[in-house]
Every structure is written in structure tokens, then in C-alpha cells.
Length: 243
Image (cartoon, rainbow, N blue to C red; front, side, top):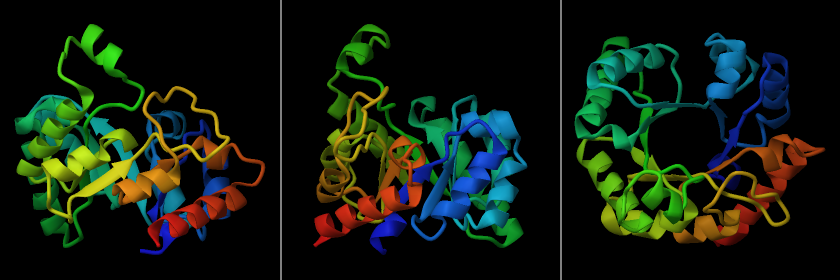
């Protein structure tokens, strides 16, 4: 991949006009556009097609599906029909839920004769630190062990990869040696960028060196005075880290 193709830009805005505008500015500067709940709840599911028409060749639908297996299976069928590049599910939904998502994805994609969207399992939100994991969620194991377990479970059920913070990249790689298993990393902040609500962050260069395949970066690009230039600088940093 070219360095720019490893950038997933989170289009976390609350109106269709700005989302389409950002695609126009960035479609030649990054590889993937991430669409999440903020944009979908404001603009509706039709925004997916509008962004594709504006030049978003690869769309990452950050659905974070988390429900009983039958419901997730049905939701996955609707997502497949949108012809997106990938979709997220919560690994914490359990192995049966993950299996249902993978099965539904493969079946409908085969019927439609299209490439199945990649299914990425969210291991643990990057806003959750060790204190929150233990005290709020009552999970006492270290974060790296928890994330590694989630990654192994996702791999066993046929997911294409995981979402994991930069701090867990190496442990995921150790847990799942298959190099085709994708590690997509949020919580990436270029030097000088505000951390915001993220707890487990690193720079783009660090994440690449640790073994990330793709980096999810939102506000440092979309809130910049010049989003295209911000994306170019991140691509340059990725290129330097890859050599």
C-alpha cells in the first residue's frame, strides 16, 4: 500500500454537506473514509451512497454492532447491501455474535457476487483505561491480556481483523500470528494534536513501527485549517516510519 492508503479518516461531523466537502478535499490524500454514528444519525443511511458518489471509494462503516446474534446477522445483511469496504462489530458481543456476523456477511456477499466487507472486531474502546476496565466494567485482567483474548476470539470466528489501540498492537500480533489478520489502530495523534477523549494514544510513526496496518485519524485532519495538508503530513510520517 501507498502510505496515504493506510490512513482512515474519521468523518465525524454532524451534517451531510461538510462530510461531502471533506471527501472532495481528501479523496486523493487518504485511503479510507470512516462513517460513524454521529454522521449517520444526522444525515441518514443515504449519506453512504452520497459519499461514494463524491469519490469515497472505500468506506469504513463504524457500526460497532453489539446485540444478540440474530439481530446482528440481520443488520449485517443491510450493511452488505451498501457495498462498503469494512464494518465494525464489538468483540464483547461474544463468539456466537461474531460468528453470526461473519456468516451473514459471506452468504449475502456471495449471493450479490461482491467482495465481502471486511469485519473488524473492536477489542476495547480507546477511551477506556485500566482503571475504567477494572472499576466500571469489573474486568480485572490487564488491558493487554483482555485485548489479546478478544483478538484470538475474533480470529477464531473468521473476522478479518481487529480495532486495537497502539498500546496493544504488539500483543495482538503475538496472539494472532497470521499476518493477513488486520490491525486497525485508532487513538493515533500526530505531534502537537490534542488527545481529546482518547486514553491510549501514540503517534502515527509509532503505530506503524509497532505493526499497525491502518491508522484511524479524525480530528487532527478534519479540524485542521487545511485538511489535505494535514493528511499529506501524516502520510509523510507513515512513509518515513515504513522505511
